[in-house]
Image 1 (cartoon, rainbow, N blue to C red):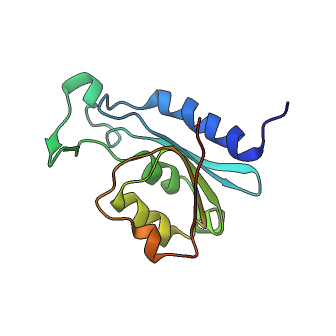
Image 2 (tube, rainbow, N blue to C red):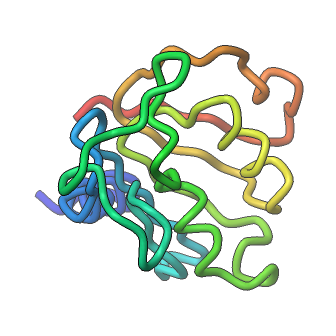
Amino acid sequence: MRKDWDKYFLDIAFKVKDRSTCPRLRVGAVVVKDNRIKGTGYNGSPSGMPHCDDVGCIIRNNHCIRTIHAEINAIMECSPEERKDATIYVTARPCAECSKVIINSGIKRVVFAKDYNVDYDWFKEAPWIEVVKIDQ
């Protein structure tokens, strides 16, 4: 049976996460508009800087601060036009900070697979953003 688009793009996000360089939580993200991939991202260190896999994590308040999150990296690959009304597929629920960036980016739909305990659910204050959890 043919996969629906959501499962198809979420599967791709799971492949993208294989590039993650933080062993604490490996996450992949894919930005899609009109069933076309506009950007991908995984959590990893800024370009040219050491990765957690190589030198270890920097943990502050139970979070690794060495890495840029997958959602941010995927959004940075897209132009504003590509983000407008797009969907982002993420292997884990976006954290509070990534949620704010998603809201501000023009993305209108978030599809994720695994729950993540967020400090604050910004999506509750942004009813124009559709948030969908799909079990993998």
